[in-house]
Image 1 (cartoon, one colour):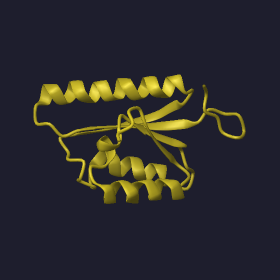
Image 2 (cartoon, helix red, strand yellow):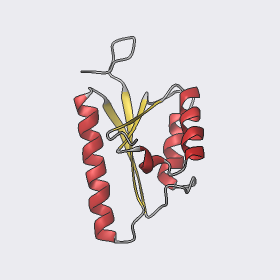
Image 3 (spheres, helix red, strand yellow):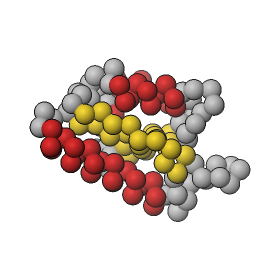
Image 4 (tube, one colour):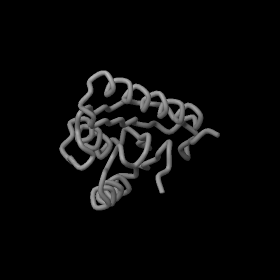
Length: 121
């Protein structure tokens, strides 16, 4: 199943991965696994990966994570470089309800979907 724009072109996606553990080796493996899973998700859906953003050692409640901030600035830019942001699950993007609602609203206003490889209840 390929996700396409109304003009028939493939949708473009950003991938976001985050870990908060202190163990450097474990961080790297966890980030690599998240990126692998999200790339597979994108490939299975015909999404073209435009860029990957990674934050290591940051809490999900920290709204000033460098990778997240940069990704959101780009996603909200006037030329709208992407259609979708894909993360492993919601907890990688936001840890609390307020943050997730604000983020989702911000992206919706910019015309960007938020999708997750693993749905959390």
